[in-house]
Length: 559
Ligand SMILES: [Zn+2]
Image (cartoon, rainbow, N blue to C red; front, side):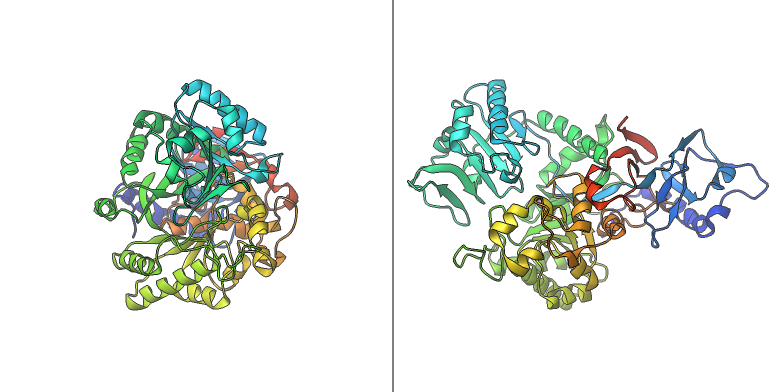
């Protein structure tokens, strides 16, 4: 499925010229004696990580009409002239990050971003302030708290929220989205009482005395279904800001997961009229609403270089924050509990085959080793029944290391991964709680699938969104406590950068136009405060994005 829009035809023409030039590099451009060729922009005197096939390093990049026309040495300054010449002062210039699994949303007024919250006390203050802002009786919602980041080392509970907002229904979703805590008013409105049985696939947590502590795992929809829908205006304004913020993290392209088809119209409207610069985006639609999917399917191939429809999303299991990942062995100290599939196995088989047979690409959520092995078996079967070249189906997350046989099958059938090494760092507490021994050590494996010949892209799943955490964990295999998990799963910083740029472009069928700094590709580039290749790995998380260029335009600067 190549969704390059008609507008890209001209890009492709430039691309072929650019590639010809690229072959002769510094000698490319005008004839030796002729005047320098005109370009829009030259960045020079840098350490340019092209992230091309050979990870070549140059010092100069020439840009014209939003595309790279040449990379090479300072001699390019004789071959090209441009009204804007940037002296990089030796700093690293590299391709913008491609976050191949993320979730960016517009947020309603009643929403609080809790991803940076550092204590339960702070959460209480934020809830109190928001309750005052929206007025008594109105909902307060939030997302992103994690007990691992809270100084109290515990989750916010019903009592905390009751104290902060006694007169507002409140529900706050944990980072990862697999559980949430609600206050008494919200539970009352949802008619969730101590006598309510656990919903199928979920848990209503209770205190030892049988009272509710406010936490609901996996099926928090029993409360959040009551939250009123936001108006399109409030959503689109904050969506624009949230997307624009990605540029400050050096992210110039995303695959955004689990969208409802109806949201595509909002994104299209935004991308048509945005006042702020926005990264390039591909939206994944979830296969839970076949009629709506059919409507979107009619539009595959539409889109342009900034917004397009991405691979179809299917959930095979849950996550480790619930926990609901589907594992082959029982969880640590939880009886025979092994998590569960998100849908009956027959349905999963039917859906994956149906989507494959329709000719679509899939990005499938699979976290537990049992879910991973099952999905790989189903995909291998679908590919054997109906072989398809270049399908680029991939598993998202791959948080447990499956059997070697499964990785061999993946390599054989070209089934790829988008992996979140940052989970090793931020979700360490969850893994320690639920896993043990070898499977704990090998969480979020990188080296083993790569050594088996599996293509591995790297993404954030917004835990957190900044790419430096993922790069750090990929090369150190360290959790938040500093403990190292299966050192043999480490990859090099070059491999990690490749996974966060070039491989993401491949997942998008866009390796011809982005993911590296090569002639003919979009001039989507970032300047870093430090050199990722030489910095002490312990300092990677301190590296800052100083500039972000999108299609040759400076769209973010830290100065
Ligand atoms: Zn996700």
